[in-house]
Length: 272
DNA sequence: AGTCGCCTGGTA
DNA sequence: TACCAGGCGACT
Image 1 (tube, chains in turn purple, brown, orange):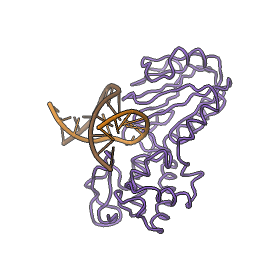
Image 2: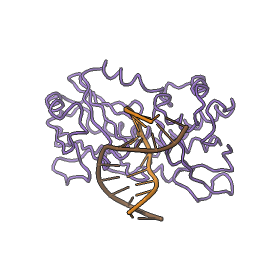
Image 3: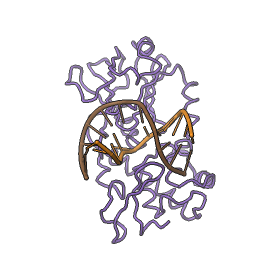
């Protein structure tokens, strides 16, 4: 799913499309994805209106006029689609928020890993967000990034994807950032040299900004709030490019497994 | 650090 | 039929 650039794109879309709308009802055919329960959520959100929508890490937060907050995680295959009331049902549509102005916010999710959770107040939200590392495009300084890399001997790619250390980076942007910085994904984080850390820091910023600019990567399931694809997949540097020619040399991109995840890199440009 | 589970579907 | 999939928490 949705990594930082995809969730950020959806946040911007939803801000334009549904802020100010009133929640009229909620429906689901997948109760496990609604927390604490459909009954509680239904009782507490109906009648409230949507004040603002924010993102932190890969979490979307819908702030309601009642002070309650709906937090959504799309995991791998979740989508948030804004449709007109009565529009043909979307594939894998599992949660529907009926809104004023004849609109619906639909949460669709093939694999059903995603969830929608109602929080009582900001305090509860802060508690959850405190578990996440800094935002790479906001509050992460080079100095802090150095300290993070120095803190562990885990593979750098695994570290980049650890939401407790840095938030928002998933498999796609981790692979591409490491390629840009010419660092092998399996390198021990605390073995990286000063200039490599600096390059990686810039590379992360660059790939995430590119992801946002292209409105996300629609390699498989990702769509924005209007159901349109992003185009970062047309600019993948190494992700998903196994066997294809490297953009930096004459070699080919390889795929390995690291931390249980498919990992793409160029063995010539990114030496161990 | 690596594997499994949550789920469903696409592809080799 | 088996394996893989953008996440992540729980286990060993």
